[in-house]
Image (cartoon, rainbow, N blue to C red; front, side, top):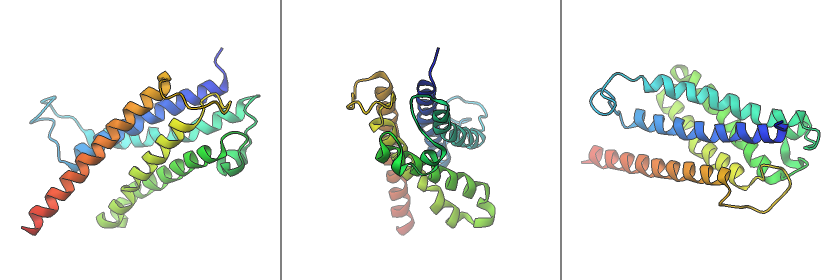
Length: 189
């Protein structure tokens, strides 16, 4: 039987995969990728997929700590979920995870209001996704998934998945930055 701690860790891994997919789709939008012209050579509404991965990411990120409330061994209270500074296990890493969650809430809410906010203001809020991803990856890598305060094992299967996703995100970030720098140079020229 799967424990609440294991289920919470698995939901957290789903969140890591979702933020990776969401950022990949966001990069496709930013770079104006055409799936008709390029692979898969057919109509693919990646904007809709980007939105839905963002919504599901937010849902799994909220569900991830809530599951711990049902664990008899984790000793997490609702206050430890909302304000994890004094959580019973790994308070620093859990606080960083909570920051990632709160940033995701801001990103999703401002995306929902993007028309009212205007493109410039919305875009400024939307770039918080990189800070949210950084906080989410920090939390995912440095938190012991069994909540036993064990030392980090970077070659654990779960951690390797997280590390590969992090490398993909860093690559995406560099591509996005390079594209923005090139467009700025072209605009000045």
